[in-house]
Image (cartoon, rainbow over all chains, first blue to last red):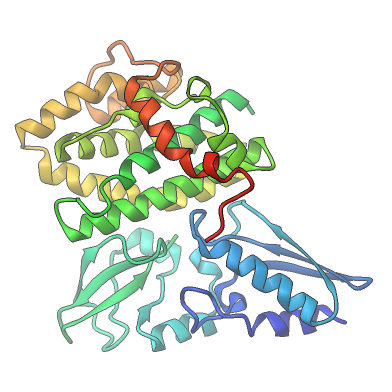
Length: 154
Length: 202
């Protein structure tokens, strides 16, 4: 078994709360090491209080077992994950599903422009900094009159 | 790293998370039900991450101690019954917490991660502070909670808090004592753990 095969299997694991993106799209898998039938995975949480964390960890373990190897999934609580780790493919999948992808962190710090994922307008306003999960805010587009969820930049 | 300092931080985050969650369902507007629930969830997640720096099993540390072994600051324990005090506490706590978390970032990797998430708590608190700052009830609540807010920080960090908040330093309400409302909260917080020591299943 190769690390590439493991990565390919992980691309099939959906995010438990936003299933249009995979855990690979989300950028939460930091490393995969294959050694003698053992697969060591380093995995970073998105938000520390995210209840999907355990579900993701179990899904990674099951995926490795499905390949016939023994998993060792290490949760790394450092600062290595931010929304800039979401892949370009992941961002496009979010947008297509009606979630405004997070602005790059550097851009977000300098401007407060948020684009509607439906019509592309920047005429949007904040409804609530918080939403149904820790990673989302609620906004409203005044151009197409559509509420939408904004993935927070962190 | 000073274990007592980290334990105090984790206990603060756990207890303010519980207190904030008390608004779920009864906040003045639906948006705040959502905001307080989400903030509470983040704070409890931060507590878990910091407990895990001190132990392999965060639940043991979070729920198996007697009340007098908790190191949380009296500010976070207060059982507040009105919105003015609740917002005053959120704002004072977030300003103090930013000072303490950013000071830890060089030595504790997870502090930087916590700091990214807290940015949204600060925006929320600041939005409400601006909205209520002309209200006498809010001003009175800030004055009343100010000695408690100072007690969140180590003495060396209090001058910075005073400068940011714009109030003079006074005698702080220090960590180390708990009032009756904490005993009641501790009872509630630990009830599932005590009734199912092997771990509850849903």
